[in-house]
Image: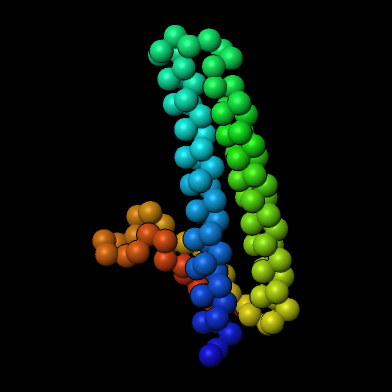
Length: 112
């Protein structure tokens, strides 16, 4: 299989994984917001479910660490691509792509 096609497969999974981590972090933040609002809505004291909030913050920290690790993975894969001699520009299609285009499709094109 040609290097460019292998690189495309890896890039697609990289972008999907990055998006999944960002989505998980967003969901956790929204969950925290809902939990805090729920406590207020039922007039529970500030100490109510404090341990649960701490555990959720631990989970959010782990997600944040995962996001930082994915940034490092992205950078290392970029370097690996260059070492393999793959000269492409990788990016996503814009949100204004024609109807029927997959919004997460990876665009690879030769450069130089």
